[in-house]
Image (cartoon, rainbow, N blue to C red; front, side, top):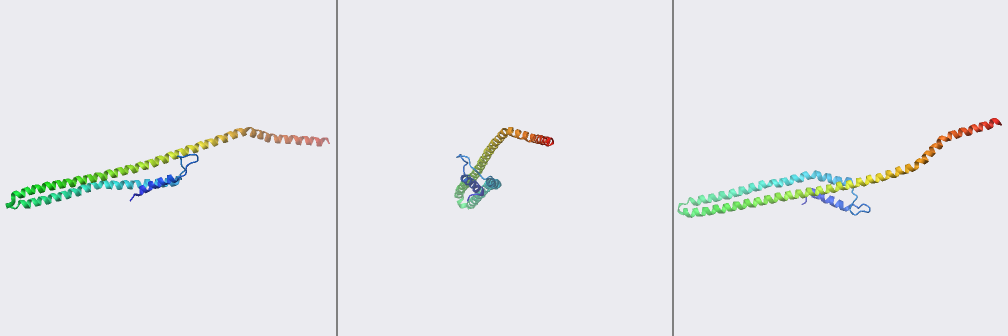
Length: 208
């Protein structure tokens, strides 16, 4: 059963795969910023819980070793009890010693085998958890790096487009400046021309 963080990573990968490419590009895609940020936000919230989960798995190594030690102690105690029982029988003393030594040796070998197996299992669990956590963090790092790079490229394209529009507006205004100056001059001269025409009309009326 996969964890929630693995599901989120799969959702991000599926979302990126479903995004459309930008016009005239086969590498850059158009993403929904809010949707991607929501997935990344949930990923950041779930990451600490996943790490705690695998830290708990790693901590189980001590429990495994402790259980193995208890089993080996029990085997040794049973072997020693059998040895003492055989030694207590005087008529079979020599045979009891031989059997007791063999039993103790077998118990020691069995206990060592249990400890070695438990140690190997615990180390395998620990290494597996560490490797998975590292892979998970690497995937998160790659996704975040890709997101940041895409955002940077989009910002650069936006600034470039804005600069181009600004240059066009500035050029058009510069080209329009002479006409604006001419229109302002005409507007300033209009009252003077009207006053002159009115004065000429008054003079003609007076002569009549």
